Image (cartoon, rainbow, N blue to C red):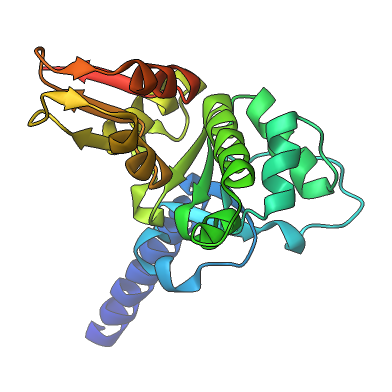
Length: 223
């Protein structure tokens, strides 16, 4: 009798765990990964997100449905230019642009942005153009992140405007100690991904710095 009770309790626990696992699988948010799968960063997020490689899908499938966002782990120079101009040359680029049109969250891994590797040797005019392209795709709603943990759990289902607010909050630079803000102060930090700069109310911004701020959509916060 006691053994039967024990068996029943074990079975009940097994069923409970199976139901919990199925429920968890159904509630996980699907994120499509374009580029190499970042296996080392997935462990802590498996209970929240289901990361699916774009290449796993059937080639003739025109549109992936039932996903909450995209993670770009490798953004080549070609991809950057095509997306910035809104002229897709590959299925992946077309999928990204469609996601942006639908206000789906799109994230790009900072270490996967290819053109930044050539910072030291690249021609200044070309590098500046690619920086402008990066600014454009950020303006479209693509968010630059350093780690997958930077993906905001509560923001994944929200619109493009909220994503832009998060970008500013997470890429803030404190320059309140400066009395004069120069263009050179901004260029280096902007390459590193800074979108918001905090300055003191008495800080003077040079004309060249003002032009750079306006052209690159940098947000100035006076405190």
